[in-house]
Image (cartoon, helix red, strand yellow):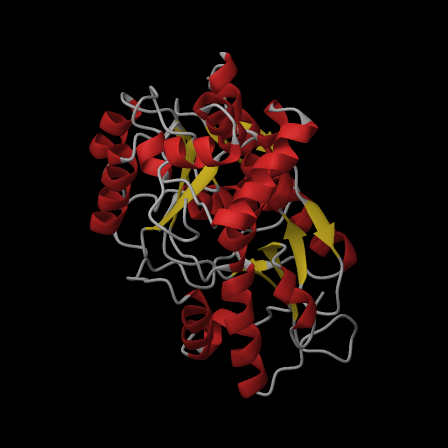
Length: 341
């Protein structure tokens, strides 16, 4: 068999003196064959430049050893960390990942689902758009393949792994009230359940602590994916009377907070703790770039890695008969203290 020629697995197996089922088992899971056999196959790969055709090799299976992933954006650091963690974990179990971005568009999200279904993936990890998602299309897809939702709850009763927003917002409200003036909430348009849950958690905790909830921008405007620009432009255009007496601000996520920090700087407002500063700013999510903002961003961090690990474990466990959980899996947030508050 010539090197780099168009090769079938049958031809490759014959060339290295092994059976096709043994070679196929290696490509599904290298640890499933003996160490000596594994070395022989890997030497053959180097010698002949062989690479299996993934889709052809899965035609005889009930479903492909592939996990589909759908996220709203691949340039958002939070979703990047989710994807990266899932990919590494399922790769260890012999699965390929197929990534699709919905680009914050419901039509693209529906197409992404269709593509993954056509590949007969074993399961899908999905961070849905939220209120703009086509729930009917998603529930139809769930009748064909297991789907586990992450980041934002689509609706009650669907398998979901994410952050306990009530807990993660409450601990930040507690801290801000304990260490200084009660925070006002600089929110964002209600694109998904997270926004609403965090807004409600803020309201409930402020009320429980005896403070009047104060939302600086209650209007629901149109919003695409540029959360930083929204935070920047919306804060610049806030009527001055809304900021009267406000010394602490809580944002719904780090991306909006970054825009607000830039706007505050343009307005000549000093952000940080202590009497020498005009504002304290805190946020939610724990994205890594918050540590390098100016000032660095205090935030209630989600356990992104743990969310991804649980989703991956659920999906690869389906092969051995595990079931998708019928209840939400909610993880607690942790405050990361930095200069902004």
